[in-house]
Length: 474
Ligand code: SF4
Ligand code: SF4
Image 1 (cartoon, rainbow, N blue to C red):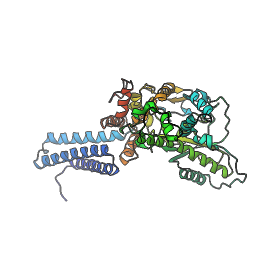
Image 2: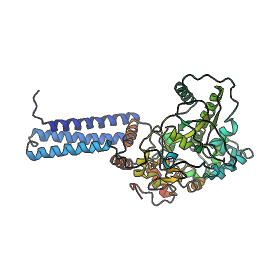
Image 3: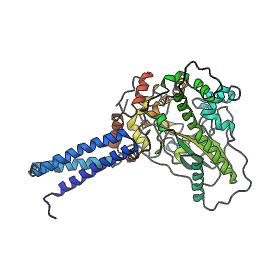
Image 4: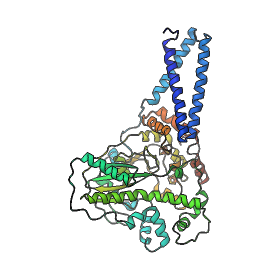
């Protein structure tokens, strides 16, 4: 079939139609999944592109594109658009070294860390000491972290009848399936490097674990509870948390001066249960491994535990460390909680994942902007005790959390904190390309669509005047 269209007009037409169709698809999928902001944005771009197509067709029909000057403009426009689309995918990868933040290989060997140096360690010692004497403390501690560690054995007798292992790969997959059946949402395996075992626990007792492997399991908090745009029903009850709500939850006693609505109590219950879910899965998995004839111990909470969970999770390929000090996963961004089972069961370790988090964090800074006490640093990551990372001021954070326990501004504002929807998976893929242009546009788009705004408003209200929409750098 003969056509009077030139090659660049055909290429430009195909490109324009392809992008327009993609936008319509994104809009439809986002609408079906209930992601209204993304649906409206995609549909808006789709409409703009439709208008552009209609204008171009009209110009062509009227012969307005036939002059030499017009043809030059069409060629230049096509070149610019093609170049722009290409640079969205081309890695600029300006940040080195390549390996993930939060692990030791970046800056040499790391000395074993003493658990007593962790922010909040004193609080855990206190909780451990009072756990059996004060019913209310028991309830609070029980719900938050102690339920599993105090009521169920994390370790136990090993079956003397050891199973025969024929294929380590098959065994590893089976163990991961078991972990999922116990409630884990993500599972990874890594070697247990000695530098990730604390030298002492929070009470000063030396720790010695000689297991070879660590199975890291994670669960994600319900997005609704950490949503930046969701209303914060607990906001008015900060002063009541946690004792008064714990009293309501337990039914043991009510010494509340604030009447806490049922909805708030239910939300707190859901959030607290989330923290114990991963622990429960770890305890069951450790028991299962011991029944196979291999030693295994569950490690439930980073501060009261014996191993450093975040570096192990990074090594096990579950995600990367963000500027906010959280492990960022593809599945639930920074909303995860992680537990570990250490064992000698011969497993096949997983590999690191490179999602481009550190490159994106360099551009983003939203958590640093939204932290009410500015505990999160701006700028480049740096080496701390052999680990390259953004060092969070844990004491500042903990001090603030003591009176504002629902502060999750650094989670709420994080662009990775989204529901596991198609459009967000696309965004995570684009970020993983490590293009500085894509990262810049993603941060601006995140701001423009209002994500994280609630966290910024909260930070301002709590005294961080620097929390401002739109500033990507300090
Ligand atoms: S929890 Fe709150 S105080 Fe702590 S680092 Fe995050 S934003 Fe800052
Ligand atoms: S808010 Fe931005 S800078 Fe902070 S962890 Fe998330 S992506 Fe990184």
